[in-house]
Length: 540
Image (tube, rainbow, N blue to C red; front, side, top):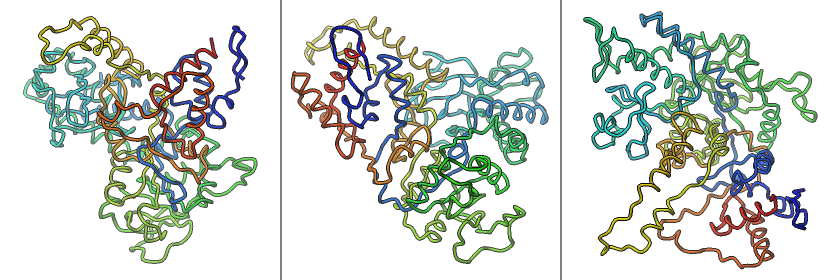
């Protein structure tokens, strides 16, 4: 029960406010009262919709493993990776002083672009317009940015110069690049040039620095040194969620299941055993079972995104030894068998499903989502852990103040309203909001402008959420319905008229949130505002 304070108001149950549809209220639950927002966010973890999807039409669920099924503990995992990267760079000749740097999770965000010519980290929108720019840990402003980018615009198609850092694995790489630029810029024994640093007869360009960092990343992951240290302490580096075996079991009952990971079999076996083995039983009602029994098909060493194009040779894995059987596998599908390589076409053939009957769940917007969507037409679910933080600090801001100043002006007006104070206030508020997300700001926005990552998410991911475990709270008959996409001129039309009485208001609210396809979130702005006021009134 929500107990309003005084005023003779009657206590109101949440189920009376929004009967059995508590997730809808998350749309409008701003931080008006911390306890209400916290309660509602825990009550129903949401899945967000870009394109409508009926779960009844999905016959097969596919999973990536890293950062999808296996969530690596942050910042412990990044700190370990960062230390190994520094050690490797020192081993190939970098100054040992760089070992003094420690990973700072507040600095990097995904979706940044590294400019290999000037050594800058860039935040851009989908068109290549610059939203933010940092050289090391120094954030460039005004004329500094114009010196590098006269039009505050980049050609993203120049992939030899501009390298996008989109994945969760890239967080340590992003921070390491900033550390190296900061290190060489601050030392007097190195002379700063526009495209790199010089010491005597030696010149190190930002391009070669990026190549060294990228090769260090490959070494840390492919040599096995990172995996070896992780496997020694899985409790520290991997999140173990008891809901995962329950959800996978239910999904297995609803359709076919496959796992497609770039990791090798031995590492996959260790991680999945840890995730799904809960001793005597996975849950009270779920008996203990081997992890491979949750999947109809398991494919390791997939080499995504190549997996979604021509693929590689399909081989079978000997699960007793972890080694590959010689020769190309040409037989029929064997239940719970483990394969290496192959292609996405092979998935469809072995499981007997078509592209749009597959819902693929992954964290890599390019390797998992973009390629599977464009090449195969698979339905896609992107895991975006940052969504939880975004929802926590997000607050609506708009430019209504500008409208007040220009309301009575038209094309014949010669005077220009003084909006400098308002503009400064908006800039300050925008900066404060961005700093709530981290030093590089939000993954999805810079002020009111969407980032490249946000655009790609909306374009290629049908569904997204902070975790795939949120599926646990939806029936498999559920229809995820995308909100209506209105053009700017259409958004000026009032689509839903509300009456003035509180009884009519609550009746309309119940009607909207009780519709059989509630993901439409088709609440009018006016109704949202009135519901916010109603909640404030109840809690005052």
